[in-house]
Image (tube, rainbow, N blue to C red):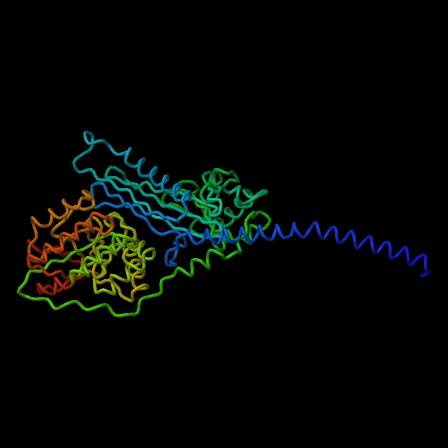
Length: 491
């Protein structure tokens, strides 16, 4: 290379270096801004996850703690369970939907003037919740309405899927793109055509119309770690005796259609950190029972509750009193620490079914499921399996007697605390009737009940009463409880 060429080369190289420096000078702020934006977004999302409430991990309840609306009226039995996620906008949307379901039920009841004396009705709502990726949560509600004039209950499902970051309610079109309806329809049809007992009914007009690739057929869906699940209402694609059916479509079968990331695990890390470990310690032993003094068994249904139950436990501890807590199975994972404290402080844990339905309306398999699932959830957290069961609404039939291998515990004094929610009324209901051997019914989900206990327990103690568990009461009265038999005592 001659001198002239060398000079030209150096001049060009210098120009490129200057140009590169200018470009780098311009890009560095952009890159820094992008990196800062990404870091800020990650920090904001980490803060968001700290606000989200996770239950102790359990099957089909991955996000949200359980809130309940329940009563103790077999003539108009209401048992509603729904998740609270800890995100204001999402929680407001969920509560509005629950209020709509309850209002619709109440508005369709016959008024008093047209209601037969023997008329009874019920509303039961339970839920499952799932997480997909790092910011999608899905909830599926099962709703059952029933009354004594209906041949069969009205059962349907309702789903809601949320973006946890924007707190927006999502539709399928927010999650999928392209010809996704055709892909879902093809998968659903092929699945049922190859699956018994559905296959023989896939050549019907009902199935063809109900599974067609149109938006209205796939309004109900959830997302979890591995799949998109679509739900079909009763009578949508098969005869009513099949009930609600669903199909889970693995994400690998939806490649090319998904608009969301289903592989991230940020929320699952947060969920795992919230897990309450199983309790290993033995419970505190109660004080000896004086056979010359009267005894009563305080019982609390429908908990645990994150605020009311601890207050009642404080009052019991201050008064060296023992009680029996009949817990609802779908609540124990949400409030595991309250359940474990009940057990650790020597109180008795009883089974009050998984979701508080009217057991007398269920078939054998569902009755067993309600009892067994509750036993399992309690045992997972306390290493204790309940020996007693209190049936919701105090209703017992032969199916329950023959299949639930536990004694049934009813009550001799009903405080009506669920109805009055008034401290003075609760205290009056007990003090005017109490006698040796009573089983007193209360509910540890109402603040007024805790307030009443603060007055009631010292007052009864001053009269010489000892506070024992139901099992201790039965033993004190020399009663050996038998599975399938009901006990209410006193009288």
